Each structure stands twice: as structure tokens, then as C-alpha cells.
Length: 193
Image 1 (cartoon, rainbow, N blue to C red):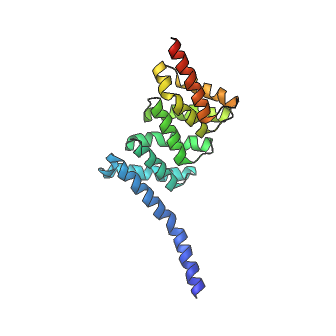
Image 2 (cartoon, rainbow, N blue to C red):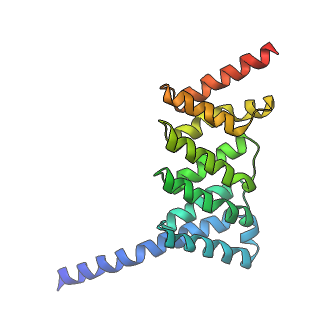
Image 3 (tube, rainbow, N blue to C red):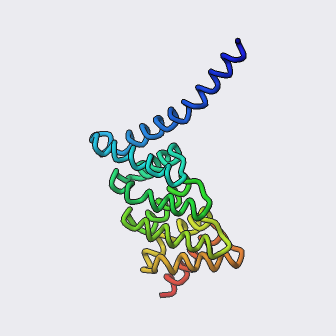
């Protein structure tokens, strides 16, 4: 009887724990998304958005945590709704974790001065570089974070900078190493002009 009760308790905990984890994650997301914490309609939008991605094969708790990351980066409910499909697309295409992918895209978008309305562009370009060169989404993001502000200051195009990072990746320079090399090139060019 004791073993059967323990087994039943374990089975119940296994069934309930994912729901508790999700509720904790989405509650945290709502708490840091200012407009959702104050507006029940926006709270419901966030809940619906995170749950809708389960049909795409995403883990609801991870999706809620990715949305929390965006909220911490300053994205409101509408911006999260705009950004999250692109986060999931990039995560799937790059075989990356959804939470990390939210960070990668957010960091790169911020470095290049882009808002949530440019997430599709950032996602598409970074996914393309990831799939067409010998690098990963994470390494591309590390490189792009290094060069973003310098490229913007020099008036250089996001797509061309990403292509340059891809070329460096194919030459064996990835991640921060590629970003530092590209940043140093940008700095030397700006000193010359």
C-alpha cells in the first residue's frame, strides 16, 4: 500500500508540476511587464500568446520565460506579441533554446537600435547567417553585439554586417572573436576618414 501511495503521489506531482512551473513563469512575466500587471486584458493576451506556441511544439514554460526576458528588456505586451513569433522561428531554425534566443535577438536588436517592429528582420538575417555559414545563432549574436553600436555610428547596414560576421565564421573566427575583429576594422576605418 505504501509503495502504491508513493507511486500515486509521484504521478500526481509529475502531472501537476509542469502546470505550476508555467503558472510561476507567466506570473513572473506579467509582473515585470508593466502594462500587463496593470491591465487584465494585456495579462490575458500574454497568457494566450504563450499558450498558443505550444501548438508549434514550444514548451509553454520556456515561452513564458522568453517573454519574461523580453519584458525585462523593456518590451511591453504588444511588443512581446510582435517579437515572440520571430523568437520561436529563430529558435527552431537554429536548434536553440527559446529563452536564449529571446536574449540573442533582443541584444542584437538593441545594439543596432531596432525595436520590436524589426524583430522579423533581425530573426531572418541571423537565422540565414546561422544556416548558411559555419556558426551558431549564439555565436552570431555575440559577434553582432560587439559591432552593433559601431556599425550604427558608421551608418553601416545591418545585413552587410551580419554577412561580414558570416564570412569571418567561415574563416574560423566566431562569436566574440569575430565581433572584436570586425569592431577593430570599423574603428580603424573611422579613424582613417
